[in-house]
Amino acid sequence: MSDSKPSQPPSGKPQGSTEGSTEDHVHGPGFSHDHGPAEPAPDPMPADAGSRALASALASSFAILKVVMVLLVIAFLLSNLKIVGPEERGVILRFGRPVGEGEGVLLSPGAKLAWPYPIDEFQRVAIGRQLQASSTAGWYLTTKPIDPQDQEEPEAMFLDPGRDGYAITADANIVHVRAILNYRITDPARYLFSFKNTPSLITNAINNAILHAAANSSVSNLFTTGLAEFRDNVSVRLQTLVREQQLGVAVDNITADVVAPRQVRRFFDQVLETAASAQAQVTDARTAADLSVRKAESSAKSILFAAAAQRTTDLIQLTNEVQRFKALLSDYQKSPELLKRRYLSELMRRSGPSLNNTFVLRENPRGLPQELRLLLNRDEKLPLENEPAKEEAPADAH
Image 1: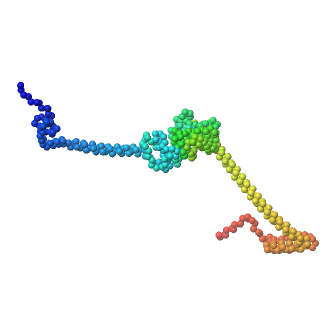
Image 2: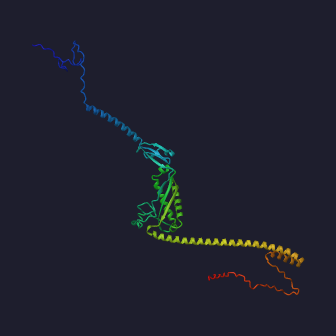
Image 3: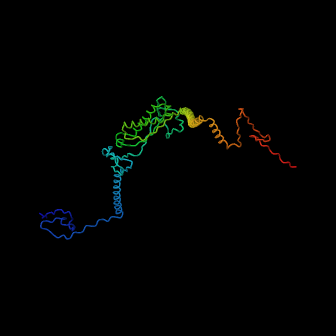
């Protein structure tokens, strides 16, 4: 029988190995020994230059990407930063509903920040600035800006009810009308939130006003003296509709134009020219009549004034004559002969300075009439009036 030794437990290290620690092998009971200091761990494999450059580039890229992302987030948050002008009011709609209640819905002028779209939507409303709206019914189709004085388009020289707008007058005639409205917003909250499309309602109100005014006017009145009345009717009708519908706007002014259909415009022009010529003749006749009446009235006043002045002068003169006659009458009644001599003496005294010679004729004692004879020299020739002067004969040259 052979002797056998007990087998050793397997070890994780080969026999004779000095590497490891007390944990690398197991001591049996009662066996121990000193292992000595542990050997240092080997250095890691050194990285090459390309790996180091790649790592540095990735680190820089990630840093730049972080900065860009932060800037993008800030720009996104500030994307709905708006400036409200001095004549404007701002409104923020959050998911389609206004932010705030009552007057708090309207934002005052200045910089305003809202959440980015589609969370918030920013709208501006003009308060003090004039806005403009035009009619869309009543005018013919045109491919250029509306101007009643422009030449007509050749391809549109017929009226197409499905394409061209028109209005019917009170006497069943067709005309083209248009209107331009200037208005201001007075109630921004109602203008924005009470209706889906307030400008469209304003346009419809203008169309209603011009058609209503045309239906209450005759065509002859529109093209002669009734255009101002037509415009007044359009304005009154439009203001009534705006007030009844409470559109939140105020009408500043409205202008309206009326033209005849293009197919018969030249005939309308002829009628208007004839009417204008007749009116001009009537005006000239009335002016001449007024001038003649004024001249006659002036002449009559002059005659009446001269007659009144002459009457006053004559009355004064007659009054003086009566007073003088009464004074002479009393003297005559006392002594007629003395009055005659005194009157004759006074008359001679007044006429004496203008006489060259004075002859006193005495009364014939027999009572017979006396003769007064003037002796003139026959040789004396008095120059006659308008007698041509005689030319003197030229002196004899011999």
